[in-house]
Picture 1: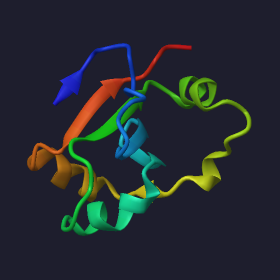
Picture 2: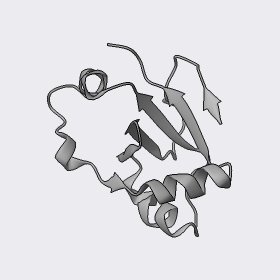
Picture 3: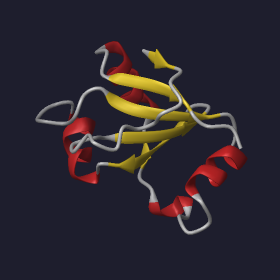
Length: 98
């Protein structure tokens, strides 16, 4: 599922699980409390999982800002992403351009 809306993510959503991506590399951006359930594919986690896709690391760095180093984010296995896609639990959104 792909969404081209520029408003990402809606701030009023209390429970959200947000990933960020470049090509086929994925990181957890928000929702660490739901990470275990998402990885297992069982239990409660907000659906669809929102995935903000960037064209390159430069665009992602602009979005994140200098105060958020990439080594602080959980890396997500691409097989987990494929399962989310198959189950229609992934909403992929194009990131803002730098």
